[in-house]
Each structure stands twice: as C-alpha cells, then as structure tokens.
Amino acid sequence: MAEPTKKDQGKGQATTSQAPAKQESPLALMKRTVIDVVAEKARKFVENGELNLPANYSINNAIKAAWIIMQTVEDKNHNKALSVCTQNSIANSLLDMIVQGLNPMKKQCYFIVYGTTLACQRSYFGSMAIAKMVEPRIDDFAFAVVYEKDIFKYGIQNGKKTIVEHSQDIKNVDKDNIIAAYCIALNKEGGSYKTEIMTIDEIHQAWKQSKMNPFDDKTGKIKDGSTHEKFTGEMALKTVINRCCKAIINASSDNALLLERIRKNDELIDRSEVDEEIDEQENLGDVIDVTEKKAELPPEVSAVEAKAEEKKTPF
Image (cartoon, rainbow, N blue to C red):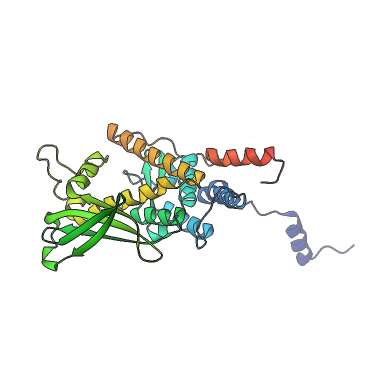
C-alpha cells in the first residue's frame, strides 16, 4: 500500500483542523445586543402605528450617526461613555432620539454623560424639528434679537401676538444692549402660526431657573467668560425659541408616545443635573458587563412586546 504523499497529508490535516473562533469585540457586541435591537423595535413602533415620523426621516441614518458619535462621547473625567454608562440608559438615549425624530448629524441633539447615565438632549434645532413634526401647518421659523434704538412694534389680536415692525441699524447691535428676543412659527403661507416675545428680564429669569445658572450670586451679573456672557444674543434666541416650540409641542395631543418620551427625557436630564450638582465627585460606577445576554430595553419596548404577545401576532 502506497504511503500518502505530502500533498495528501496536507489535505487530511486541512479537513481535521479547525480555526479558532473569532472573539466578538465589546463594541460589536453592544451594537448587536443594544443598538441594533432598539433600532428594530423602533421600526416595529412605526409598523404598528405607535410612532409617526417625518416622511424624510431615516431611522437607519440617524442610528448610524448616533452610533458613530456615541463612541466619541466622554464624561467629565474623559472616560468613554460606552464604558461607564449602563446599557439601559444607552438604549433609552437612542430611543429618545428616534421617537423625537432627531438626527445628531444635523445638530438636533447631542449625547451627555451624567454619572452612569447617557442622555440624549435636544438642541433648539431639535425643538424646531419636533414642533414642525407635531404641527404640520408649521413650515419654518423666524427669530431675532431686539436691541436698544431698534424700531420694534407688535400687536395683539384675539390674545395672539403679532410682530408689526422690526427695523434695525447695524450700529444698534451690541450684546450689552439687548432688550428682547422673539420667535415666530410660520405657516405654509408665510403668516404667523405662533409668536413668542420675551423681554431681557424674562430671559434672565429663565436663565436663573436653569441648573447652569450663569449669574454670579455676589454681583448679580452674568459671569465673565461664561457662554451666556460671550454669546448673549445666541443664548437669548435659544431661550425664546425653546419656549415657543414647547408651547406648540405640549399642545399636540395625537402623539402620546412622543410626548411621553419628551416628558421622561426632560425629567431625566433635570434629575441628572441635580445629582451632578450635589455630588461633583460622583463615582462613575462599574464598566458595562458585555456578556452574551439580551439587552435590557426601555419600558415602552417591553410594553409593545407584551401588547403584541397579547394579540398573538408576530412582533
């Protein structure tokens, strides 16, 4: 009997040996067990009529952008958010973004770490996007800062404010001479759907109510070097735009899931900011356990699953 050649021996070895299984990286595991799972559940929300998103909103694009950005987010000690934040908060922040129809690449929201919690906080660009989503009659927004010596007139008809005239000379533009700011939600005909006007005193009072109070308790003036001091006009616009949009969003009654997520998200951020203020040296907690298991999902996701099971229909 002929001895096997080296070529035959090589064939035999190839059939009996097995390559070691490639170990999944922590990021890949998190994407599969958290990010991808939430994305699928969000699509189910849409399919089941639980969630209405703008026609031009792409869940896939928003998720891809969020996943890229999440990997760069750090806490105040420069620890990566995906290493210190709980899986549940990561899932919730992503779901908050999707339900509100926001895209971080458009600067409509950003992710912030509070201890071991990751939160999705919307910008005023995001507030305008949501206002247009819940009220289809709104087409655009117009806003401006009013300075001393500007010609500014507004009228009130049936309890609704309307800007009658606003003329401005470039010489009037001075952040120390701001007297008011306004925001107009415009309808598709270019008319006013809603107008919000705030005096500088009202704006200052709103700033004092925030957790990031920019005022010096001793002098009573805005802190030198603070964002509010450097960009007073932009921060004034942010305040009046958010107030205008909040009134529009709260008036919506046909998108319960959206309103519930907004309320919970605002409460989460307020509570987290208070916790940060109380304990600046808060322990960041344990690193995420990336063991093979089903990701813990937000309550709304579980509720939809239970509803689907009750109806005996595939989720």
